[in-house]
Length: 405
Image (cartoon, rainbow, N blue to C red):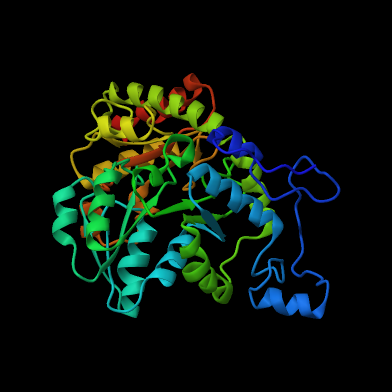
């Protein structure tokens, strides 16, 4: 039998139970519906469904039961009215901008966001008459000063990729509300297992499901969690016409990944804290960027917003006397890895290491990288579930030879 879930369930329970009703076969594990089209009960019903007058699936580009299960589950976990799944995290950001903005509008966003986000909003949408301004992530006065009458969207990651900077979501929500703008928060690093931006006043939550929502580096996926009216009236029509939809198989993989999200996030965050503490004391390391450390500039804020947990991603700068030496030393550490993966993804159960200045932020102008704090000696580590001593030993292979690098 299908029963409607009672209200007030914990997000951990919703991560396992929220989904579309079971089929007549009574499957306990959510079904994977691999179909691009749907047989209609009658021509009249088909006409009503295509006109939006009756619920029902019509075509793979406009809906799928497996994708709907993912959308319902993630919306329930984030505490939003609805969710729209997309082909990738970047397509979710693009869909949000296409659906909400027009020529002449202004976007205000953090200079510390992911490199592709900087390029998409700052360069690609500029071609369509959408202007933008970047500000320091944690400088609330700078956010306030940069707001214009044309500002329609404030956008922030918290924590950011890769420096793990944290923003005061409640304060930004207040600024957005006063300006008549929306606040969108990229919750990729923390996920709803650690924080729910809606509770701090955000209007929109963006996800790259490719990361922790999947959890094992298998598929590409994205999502927008937002009010139902915004999704149905402003975002869904754009998605239907543009076709930036999530495949049923990828939706099913992420749907099953969500079932272990809370367990993974807390276990990997504990690993990241232990590694960050070890790195902070290592003589080859100049600085560690991790919200769980008291040395982090926004440590207290991060602990309040993220339930006392710092997340599973950290970054560190190797000691060096010049940018050239820093790059060479960072490359030496990465090339010495034998257990950990040199890989630009994150959110996997395997520990992944990357050099942001030459990968995720490699296409930015040097002044943009400097403004974002991305130095040549910076290494990002998305900490996985290997034994901690093996993680430390693998990094030590590189540290041990730094004097020769």
